[in-house]
Length: 70
Image (tube, rainbow, N blue to C red; front, side, top):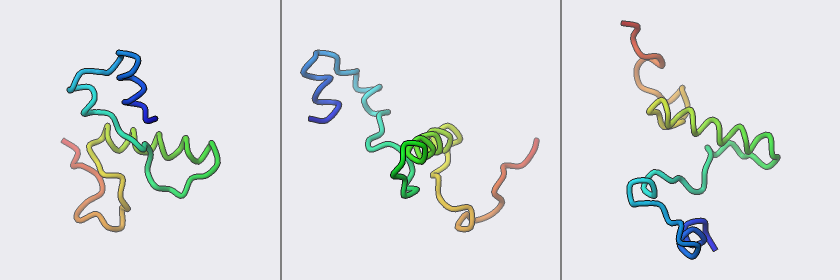
């Protein structure tokens, strides 16, 4: 059973706005298998989302890798 089904069966399903912000599976594809690497992939995705980035390779980024300093 997936997380949303469990929440729904427990009558704890979040509202549409919150549900639309859930990510699953979570984390960036780093080839993580061990708990520490899985944690790193989760934190990396959180950082990418918070910064409005995709989490892709810097070598594939067009233009500067940092935003201009005001």
